[in-house]
Image 1 (cartoon, rainbow, N blue to C red):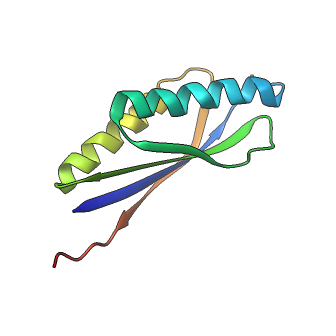
Image 2: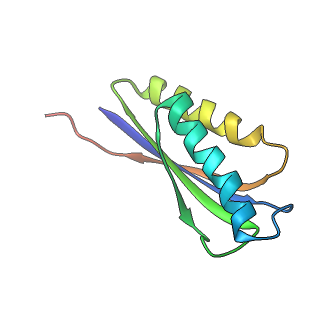
Length: 98
């Protein structure tokens, strides 16, 4: 079993309220869940208008499959013209086989 978490810090320069920010975040989170079948959530900066941190996780039987899915999620997030990705980081869960 292979598991990886992807965290992305994002700047939303056009958002002038929490309501506007949450609309963008909701589309990113729900879109990635539906499209790539990953776990996704806003994990930081919930009360700031123009900043957010999103977390994504995927578990699979093959490391290359996990990497491929998270690559797709990253491309999906980067494709949004109204956001700026400040950083992204992957953390692999070390699972020893029995």
